[in-house]
Picture: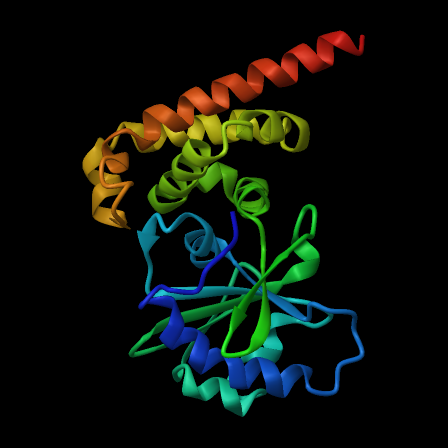
Length: 229
Protein backbone atom coordinates (compact mmCIF):
# COMPACT_ATOMS: atom_id res chain seq x y z
CA UNK A 1 0.00 0.00 0.00
CA UNK A 2 1.25 3.46 -0.95
CA UNK A 3 -0.23 6.93 -0.30
CA UNK A 4 -1.77 8.68 -3.32
CA UNK A 5 -2.56 12.35 -3.70
CA UNK A 6 -5.95 12.32 -5.38
CA UNK A 7 -8.33 14.03 -2.95
CA UNK A 8 -10.16 17.06 -4.39
CA UNK A 9 -10.27 18.38 -0.81
CA UNK A 10 -6.56 18.05 0.00
CA UNK A 11 -4.95 19.12 -3.27
CA UNK A 12 -6.08 22.78 -3.27
CA UNK A 13 -4.86 23.18 0.31
CA UNK A 14 -1.55 21.53 -0.53
CA UNK A 15 -1.08 23.98 -3.41
CA UNK A 16 -1.64 26.85 -0.97
CA UNK A 17 0.64 25.40 1.72
CA UNK A 18 3.62 24.49 -0.47
CA UNK A 19 4.91 28.08 -0.93
CA UNK A 20 4.84 28.61 2.85
CA UNK A 21 6.72 25.35 3.42
CA UNK A 22 9.25 26.11 0.68
CA UNK A 23 9.85 29.60 2.05
CA UNK A 24 10.45 28.27 5.54
CA UNK A 25 12.78 25.42 4.60
CA UNK A 26 14.63 26.79 1.54
CA UNK A 27 17.85 27.33 3.53
CA UNK A 28 17.39 24.47 6.01
CA UNK A 29 20.26 22.06 6.61
CA UNK A 30 18.08 19.67 8.64
CA UNK A 31 17.94 16.09 7.34
CA UNK A 32 14.99 15.23 5.11
CA UNK A 33 12.09 15.18 5.38
CA UNK A 34 11.61 18.75 6.57
CA UNK A 35 7.87 18.13 6.81
CA UNK A 36 5.28 15.41 6.27
CA UNK A 37 1.54 15.20 5.65
CA UNK A 38 -0.12 13.69 8.70
CA UNK A 39 -3.40 13.60 10.63
CA UNK A 40 -6.76 12.80 9.05
CA UNK A 41 -5.69 14.21 5.69
CA UNK A 42 -2.57 12.04 5.69
CA UNK A 43 -4.63 9.02 6.68
CA UNK A 44 -7.01 9.66 3.78
CA UNK A 45 -4.08 9.52 1.34
CA UNK A 46 -3.61 5.89 2.44
CA UNK A 47 -7.14 4.69 3.16
CA UNK A 48 -9.33 6.99 1.03
CA UNK A 49 -11.86 6.73 3.83
CA UNK A 50 -13.34 10.22 4.27
CA UNK A 51 -13.33 13.71 2.85
CA UNK A 52 -11.88 16.55 4.87
CA UNK A 53 -11.48 20.24 4.12
CA UNK A 54 -8.26 20.50 6.07
CA UNK A 55 -4.61 19.53 5.74
CA UNK A 56 -2.36 18.45 8.62
CA UNK A 57 1.41 18.95 8.32
CA UNK A 58 4.14 17.94 10.77
CA UNK A 59 7.20 20.19 10.53
CA UNK A 60 10.72 19.42 11.72
CA UNK A 61 13.22 21.58 13.55
CA UNK A 62 11.08 24.62 14.34
CA UNK A 63 8.00 25.85 16.13
CA UNK A 64 4.76 25.63 14.14
CA UNK A 65 4.25 29.25 15.16
CA UNK A 66 6.70 30.13 12.38
CA UNK A 67 3.85 29.43 9.93
CA UNK A 68 1.63 32.20 11.25
CA UNK A 69 1.00 34.58 8.32
CA UNK A 70 2.65 37.43 10.25
CA UNK A 71 5.89 35.43 10.38
CA UNK A 72 5.57 33.61 7.05
CA UNK A 73 3.83 35.87 4.51
CA UNK A 74 3.43 32.99 2.05
CA UNK A 75 1.07 31.36 4.56
CA UNK A 76 -1.39 34.21 4.02
CA UNK A 77 -2.34 32.52 0.73
CA UNK A 78 -3.99 29.79 2.82
CA UNK A 79 -6.12 32.33 4.68
CA UNK A 80 -6.04 35.17 7.15
CA UNK A 81 -7.76 33.51 10.10
CA UNK A 82 -5.21 31.98 12.44
CA UNK A 83 -5.39 30.18 15.75
CA UNK A 84 -2.87 28.63 18.12
CA UNK A 85 -4.46 25.34 19.29
CA UNK A 86 -2.75 22.73 21.51
CA UNK A 87 0.77 23.67 20.33
CA UNK A 88 -0.32 23.77 16.70
CA UNK A 89 -0.67 26.68 14.28
CA UNK A 90 -3.93 26.58 12.30
CA UNK A 91 -4.46 28.87 9.31
CA UNK A 92 -7.95 28.97 7.77
CA UNK A 93 -9.32 30.42 4.56
CA UNK A 94 -12.16 29.89 2.10
CA UNK A 95 -10.75 26.56 0.85
CA UNK A 96 -10.35 25.07 4.33
CA UNK A 97 -7.65 25.00 7.00
CA UNK A 98 -4.02 23.92 7.26
CA UNK A 99 -2.68 22.87 10.67
CA UNK A 100 1.07 22.86 11.30
CA UNK A 101 2.46 20.91 14.26
CA UNK A 102 5.90 19.89 15.42
CA UNK A 103 7.24 16.60 14.07
CA UNK A 104 9.22 16.19 17.30
CA UNK A 105 5.97 15.45 19.16
CA UNK A 106 5.49 12.28 17.11
CA UNK A 107 5.75 9.06 19.14
CA UNK A 108 7.80 7.07 16.60
CA UNK A 109 8.75 9.29 13.61
CA UNK A 110 8.63 7.58 10.24
CA UNK A 111 7.40 8.39 6.75
CA UNK A 112 6.68 7.11 3.26
CA UNK A 113 7.02 9.02 0.01
CA UNK A 114 4.54 10.05 -2.65
CA UNK A 115 5.14 12.10 -5.80
CA UNK A 116 3.29 15.31 -6.64
CA UNK A 117 4.16 17.51 -9.63
CA UNK A 118 7.56 15.88 -9.93
CA UNK A 119 8.56 16.36 -6.30
CA UNK A 120 8.66 13.85 -3.47
CA UNK A 121 6.44 14.54 -0.48
CA UNK A 122 6.61 12.69 2.84
CA UNK A 123 3.49 11.15 4.35
CA UNK A 124 3.34 9.63 7.83
CA UNK A 125 2.16 5.97 7.92
CA UNK A 126 -1.41 5.14 9.01
CA UNK A 127 -0.62 3.31 12.25
CA UNK A 128 1.76 6.09 13.26
CA UNK A 129 -0.96 8.68 12.62
CA UNK A 130 -3.57 6.96 14.80
CA UNK A 131 -0.99 6.24 17.52
CA UNK A 132 -0.20 9.95 17.68
CA UNK A 133 -3.90 10.75 17.89
CA UNK A 134 -4.38 8.33 20.79
CA UNK A 135 -1.19 9.39 22.59
CA UNK A 136 -2.17 13.06 22.75
CA UNK A 137 -5.98 13.04 22.41
CA UNK A 138 -7.23 9.86 24.13
CA UNK A 139 -9.18 11.54 26.97
CA UNK A 140 -11.08 13.79 24.55
CA UNK A 141 -11.23 11.59 21.43
CA UNK A 142 -13.57 13.09 18.82
CA UNK A 143 -16.17 11.49 16.58
CA UNK A 144 -13.92 11.99 13.55
CA UNK A 145 -10.94 10.41 15.34
CA UNK A 146 -13.06 7.39 16.28
CA UNK A 147 -14.06 7.00 12.62
CA UNK A 148 -10.40 7.23 11.58
CA UNK A 149 -9.39 4.61 14.15
CA UNK A 150 -12.12 2.21 13.04
CA UNK A 151 -11.19 2.67 9.37
CA UNK A 152 -7.53 1.99 10.13
CA UNK A 153 -8.44 -1.14 12.09
CA UNK A 154 -10.44 -2.47 9.13
CA UNK A 155 -7.41 -2.14 6.86
CA UNK A 156 -4.72 -3.23 9.37
CA UNK A 157 -5.75 -6.34 11.35
CA UNK A 158 -2.62 -6.11 13.53
CA UNK A 159 -3.54 -2.68 14.93
CA UNK A 160 -4.50 -4.10 18.34
CA UNK A 161 -0.97 -5.51 18.70
CA UNK A 162 0.50 -2.10 17.88
CA UNK A 163 -1.71 -0.35 20.44
CA UNK A 164 -0.85 -2.92 23.11
CA UNK A 165 2.89 -2.43 22.57
CA UNK A 166 3.03 1.35 22.16
CA UNK A 167 0.03 2.77 24.03
CA UNK A 168 -0.87 0.48 26.93
CA UNK A 169 -0.88 3.49 29.26
CA UNK A 170 -3.52 5.31 27.16
CA UNK A 171 -5.97 2.50 26.46
CA UNK A 172 -8.19 2.93 29.52
CA UNK A 173 -8.60 6.65 28.79
CA UNK A 174 -9.40 5.82 25.17
CA UNK A 175 -11.96 3.20 26.23
CA UNK A 176 -13.72 5.73 28.49
CA UNK A 177 -13.77 8.36 25.72
CA UNK A 178 -15.23 5.87 23.25
CA UNK A 179 -17.94 4.88 25.71
CA UNK A 180 -18.83 8.56 26.07
CA UNK A 181 -19.07 8.92 22.29
CA UNK A 182 -21.15 5.76 22.07
CA UNK A 183 -23.79 7.28 24.34
CA UNK A 184 -24.37 9.98 21.71
CA UNK A 185 -25.50 7.35 19.19
CA UNK A 186 -24.22 6.61 15.65
CA UNK A 187 -25.79 9.79 14.31
CA UNK A 188 -23.07 11.84 16.01
CA UNK A 189 -20.33 10.21 13.95
CA UNK A 190 -22.34 10.36 10.75
CA UNK A 191 -22.81 14.10 11.31
CA UNK A 192 -19.07 14.60 11.89
CA UNK A 193 -17.62 12.84 8.82
CA UNK A 194 -18.20 12.45 5.08
CA UNK A 195 -17.25 8.81 4.37
CA UNK A 196 -16.00 7.74 0.97
CA UNK A 197 -17.12 4.67 -0.96
CA UNK A 198 -16.11 1.51 0.84
CA UNK A 199 -16.58 3.10 4.27
CA UNK A 200 -20.17 4.34 3.95
CA UNK A 201 -21.41 1.85 6.57
CA UNK A 202 -18.70 2.67 9.09
CA UNK A 203 -20.35 5.60 10.92
CA UNK A 204 -23.00 3.21 12.21
CA UNK A 205 -20.43 0.70 13.49
CA UNK A 206 -17.34 2.79 14.31
CA UNK A 207 -17.77 2.91 18.10
CA UNK A 208 -18.55 -0.80 18.38
CA UNK A 209 -15.53 -1.69 16.24
CA UNK A 210 -13.26 0.72 18.12
CA UNK A 211 -14.30 -0.68 21.51
CA UNK A 212 -13.67 -4.22 20.29
CA UNK A 213 -10.23 -3.11 19.06
CA UNK A 214 -9.35 -1.44 22.35
CA UNK A 215 -10.60 -4.41 24.38
CA UNK A 216 -8.30 -6.70 22.34
CA UNK A 217 -5.39 -4.31 22.85
CA UNK A 218 -5.99 -4.14 26.61
CA UNK A 219 -6.11 -7.95 26.81
CA UNK A 220 -2.88 -8.24 24.82
CA UNK A 221 -1.18 -5.62 27.00
CA UNK A 222 -2.27 -7.47 30.13
CA UNK A 223 -0.99 -10.77 28.73
CA UNK A 224 2.40 -9.15 27.98
CA UNK A 225 2.56 -7.67 31.49
CA UNK A 226 1.74 -11.03 33.13
CA UNK A 227 4.32 -12.79 30.97
CA UNK A 228 7.10 -10.48 32.19
CA UNK A 229 6.36 -10.95 35.90
